[in-house]
Length: 103
Image 1 (cartoon, rainbow, N blue to C red):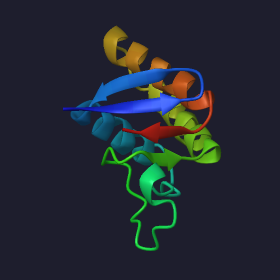
Image 2 (tube, rainbow, N blue to C red; image 1 turned 90 degrees about the vertical axis):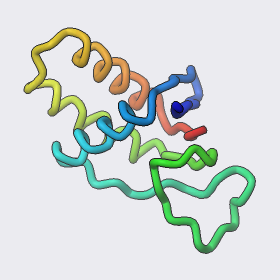
Image 3 (cartoon, rainbow, N blue to C red; image 1 turned 60 degrees about the vertical axis):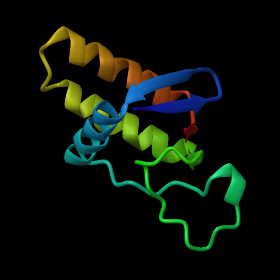
């Protein structure tokens, strides 16, 4: 199963495991999640948890995406293998493009 990250400029498909690793790595490098905004179909949800791990069309806002990118850039300093480094570089570039929805 995978997550589809849909931004304003492009869409990325990321496996659930890889997405979980992105979130963990970012938190280990200083990212403080703000929480996502509710799904498209439930904009007025009072009980929305703000999670990043479901694919309900919730929104990661631009500022949060930028903070995520900052933390992933810090993580790059400790990665020497090409494949994981290229993946993180792509995630950083994607997050720098602005907010995105999780499907």
